[in-house]
Image (cartoon, rainbow, N blue to C red; front, side):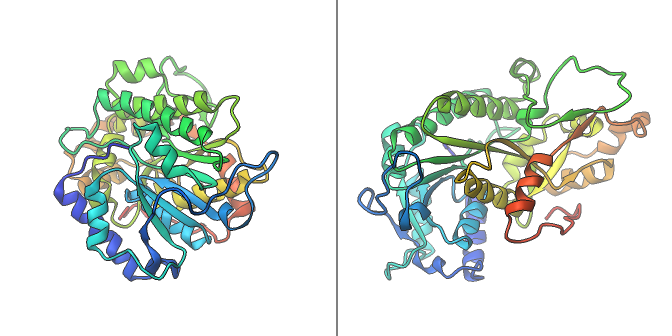
Length: 375
């Protein structure tokens, strides 16, 4: 949604995407990427009391599919046998994909592309038509801003979220939507007690306080919170299954090149999160798998609501300093902790809900420990 990128970051995305496709990515469909003709193919219409059947049920649309998280979701969907319609917002994105010669002519299932503006319900409806599900993974990013995010972007993100859900509801074939939110939509609150014997548990029932985010200029957290709330409001009482994934700071191979702007925006206020036990990271592959497994579990109503997603809680100042170093941020995390280093964290993150879902449904294990060498 309204992704603005510098030439350098866009070229990094192109290089990363090309490398992944040349590597094969674990699926044969990569050779079949081509532009969608729009309406008229994979025409799965909504059936009362059940999901669409046949091959059309395996057709999904992904917004923000060339972003760091979006590309991982697309790759994971292909591995799970889905046909993916990639909703691109700018002609620049389309041109870059064409330059990479990713559009096959052999008609094999793979990734189709279509132009869609997330602020335009009509273009969203055309992009979603014929798909059984939607993965909304795009986000506003401004490489010209110091933090990568502005107050205005927070407002736009909420508006876009509502329009995406409205387009899903309007599109007969769409039955399910997986919405990419953020852990930041859960952790920023005020007036927590300071003298508890045990840490306060932060789980899916927790919401960030929009007033607190606004007062402290935490625009990225405000945007994610407002957007997710807008999505839930728009979906309430409608014939659409919705799940939101709330990942921590997304890391993994290439994150400092392809996701640095969003990472910097995420880390505003990070020292307070570190002190309170709320700064965590999520490997992009874990995040992508969470999206796909949640989508599949929605079919038999074993998934619903929100899911907090993280692999590792950053507890030591040295780990935070390494994040700052990789992202080119000013140092000083260790010094910021001072004499409070040994005090117990006031909060404890909980991902039990997602762990239960993934342990019961995932097709591969994620027991691998992701080290703090985040890239």
